[in-house]
Image (cartoon, rainbow, N blue to C red; front, top):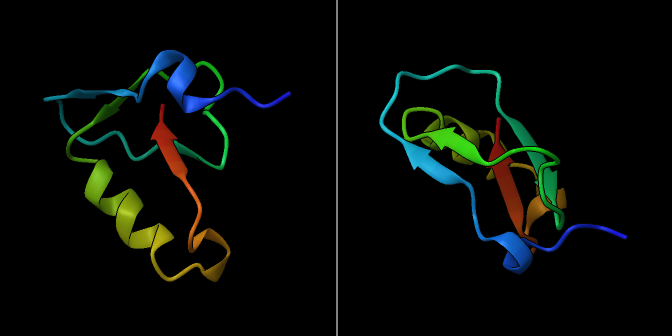
Length: 63
């Protein structure tokens, strides 16, 4: 059964440099992912936006 975002909340935003090695999941939580750098979040959003498979879905981004 997929983990639900509302069971543990969204990943915590960190004020650290970008890592570039984040993971994404559509309509599911990133297993073991509890943080994401603010610097990586815009990159993830720009990569997900053009993907029609993510439209009208929840996308989680975390390390």
